[in-house]
Structures are given as C-alpha cells and as structure tokens.
Length: 159
Image (tube, rainbow, N blue to C red):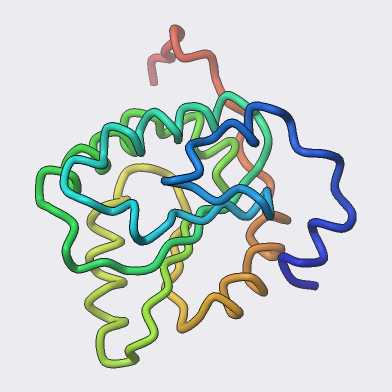
C-alpha cells in the first residue's frame, strides 16, 4: 500500500482541506500533505503556521511531506520550531509524521539531526527518506499509528 492507494479508498476531502493555500501546501493526496519547496521563501513561517492550524482544525490524521531546504532562514526555523512545540497536544493527536526528502545520502545524517532539533518537544514522528516514492510508501505506515486524543487546550493537568 502506498499513498496513491489512500486516495482511492478515502471519503471526499473536506472543503477546508481544499481551501488550503495551494501555493504552500498540496493536499490533493490527503492525508498526505506536501509542503511545496518553492513556498519556502524568507518569511514563510507565519503562513506555514496558519495553514498548519487549518490542518489541525480538521481533526483528521495527516502526514506532512517536504523536501529538505538548506536555505530556510534561522528566523523561519525558530518560528516553526516554537509553533510545533506550542501545538504539541494537537500535533500528537493528528499529525502522524513529518517526512523529509533528502536525496543526497551524504546529507541525510545532517538533515536528520536538524529535523530532530527543529521538532524536539513537538511529539511528532520524523523521518528522512531518499525520495517522494519512499515517502509515499511510508505515509500509510505512519497513518496506521494512532495518535493521542487531543486534550482541551484550556485545561492543564498537574503531575
């Protein structure tokens, strides 16, 4: 089974998925959602956060697939990292994983470490793969993992 198999067996996309900013995300194969590489321009992190909020609002499992981009600014990385950590509960419930494509074998270890630092504390599974084909094959595996039910954001629990 790969991501193409998911599209033939799923229900029609909710209109809010279709309304994602197509310049930033490709949700045509939802629950596999692709971040478009050309969207990664300086200052894109705010739009990324807004679109991620829309994805989480669907309350449906999904997997993000993106290509590694060395040119992401430090500010964008900091903003996205902080957002991932702040949304930990909802991400754990609905985002089954972030898959990063890095075709250069010699760069995968560095990419994996950068991804680990960026997503540390977010509760999201992360994987670095060699191609979109491998990402598409991995997506159903990640989607089978059940997420934690989202706790109400306004409530906190003392431990």
